[in-house]
Image (tube, rainbow, N blue to C red):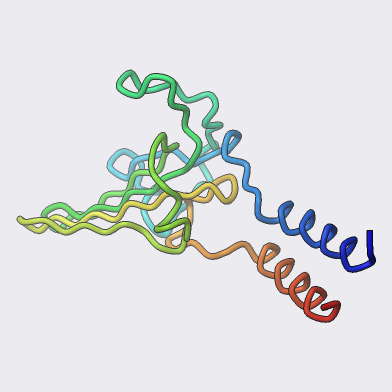
Length: 151
């Protein structure tokens, strides 16, 4: 095994350790702004406790499916904004895996909905807009630099 192969192997192990996300042990904020105004944006979690999604009861209409993501729903119905934060059973984090983007839908009669899902870290459904994890970006940048210097 040559020196380049060793560096390539180390690069692969480090990259995978940054890229792999834990989806089965996520904790999410659970609240509704219609019963708790602190649930809206800007989000105030000072009186909430975070929920371990492993403890959330499975849905009757989704047998065998567990909650592995967080979600935030922001909707405007007849001029009134409502926010819902909870564990999510289905969906894809962000759009095509990019958590910075949410699905948006508009309807008739002044109805708008934004649906965001994430699984990058515990409590990821707290922010108004999601950003990539700084450590991940830094790690990939450093590893790319090292890889380019070696080859």
